[in-house]
Figure (cartoon, rainbow, N blue to C red):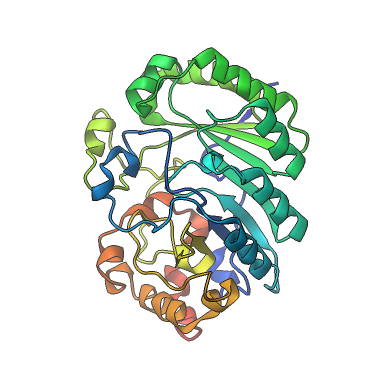
Length: 337
């Protein structure tokens, strides 16, 4: 039985209609950004550019465990559980030597319905796989960068033993227990329908769900038209039609905590602002604070009113789902922020 093909939705399934749920007592999503560094150099990612062209991302490479535990303790003080705690960001989470302990601590505190890791998967070995499974990881999302070792060299700038990599994925899947495995690939890593079929043939036996995602132009300085091979960049990452919307929904339902403790309101490669530091404030204080509320109020008049980063950002349009569109609710929400 192969992994279920998903399209147009997240691996977690149907989303809440955001405009009807706001304001939220607790974020739906907290993204923990544990490592500002990566073992890959994928052509569509910020790590494809020289470090000096990244701009401000984080003053530290690795999130310290005491600060991480403080953040999880903070999250336990919210009046509602998160829908998801996700280990991701501009880097590879499995590079953190304490990643399994991080999952275990969050599970022990019972702060989220689902704990996910987004990874390229190459660093998985038997010891780490079993540790993540034992820690109670709910979902492992593996980003595939090609259907052969040669493809990995071209797209990710790394040499891998492809057969050994497949064996690692099979080991995790066969021992996964309650952990769900989601495998995805970006469409620019595949050359035509024959390679897409081969992708499913190779990977659907080592996952619960599987998807082909779509290239999105998220980093200034990268030639996405070249990477797309002439295909129009006119659908969202999940394959939905681009929505006509003026309001970015991310700061209304999520926060990202960076390795240096900085708290930012979205997944953008350039931050519209830092809205607090988890080393100096509690996460609920930042979430409910006047600085973030004021920023949300600006967004309700459209991204062009929320500063130069937001006015020049298209990322939210490529990541949005129909349930996230806030424009019809803007009038009501302006009285709440």
